[in-house]
Length: 419
Image 1 (cartoon, one colour):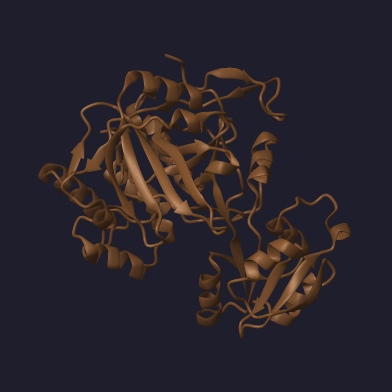
Image 2: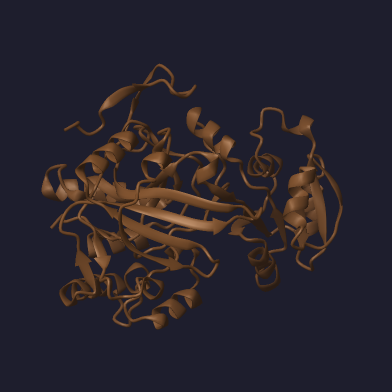
């Protein structure tokens, strides 16, 4: 078996060409899954980081075994993480969760209609990806991360000794999608509130496992979503190494969904900006040297497509009126061709606070109900730009991309067995 951090030469991409790079292991694992008697629609949930408190409560009330009881634990006793571990143990004992008899990969398919009206079929695979040191290569960030309290996810991992939700990785392995077309053992499906069909299949065949593992492990993986979860996995791995005095535990890898980094397999939305501690007037004045500002209609269903057609961003006030922001090319010489980079450059010396929010209706709600004084709607990053970011080893500004549809939590749990 290949040793961790085996080095090979990659020649397919410009930045990687003729460079010796680190590539990560990607392995099957003995998955913990909901009993086939339980309805997946009732017990699975969106990822924790897109759920509000009210969302979490609604899911918990939908079914007593909903995954939010583990992934977003609440407790009257004061220690929700220990409670989550206790619940998980009880669910295993009572057969709510059952363990696969052999290591497997989980092929995960999503069928949906995108914002252009095109029917999309996206496929990826859930397995265990090697946890590598920061900066070591092999598993690469695609954007800078914002400071974020990591205590919650770390405490939950410590208590449950498990990966409850997957990191999302993008593979540079050409042909991975075709490799995943062969159907596996059907395990069930669900339809989410957006009409997306999520379905999963178990793969235990040794031939297919070796093909999938070898394809992914031959190329770097770019983290699309879950940078903080991956960082937590690194922290927990180091804690386990110190405790056990070795590096052979399940904490050496972390549960990851991986699909191919190509346009047909990715649907990317924008993460818009909400501003505080700066007035709308001052924000517009600060942007005026860098953008041509013109009147726009109030935000509606056509705003995003208009932005794409005319190459503009959209500045929105708390009261609802809006202005187009059209970048002045000469003002952004040397700046990445990204709306997030444009704003970061233009406002680099302007005192303000910024928050991030996906979805136009969600942005409008935040403007009405919070202290935000203005918002800027930005355009999605193209898949080709994400590919360039990976190939050239670049980093985008924080919160540049929002990958959709969001993976469901609860299809698969990975026990780490470090005790």
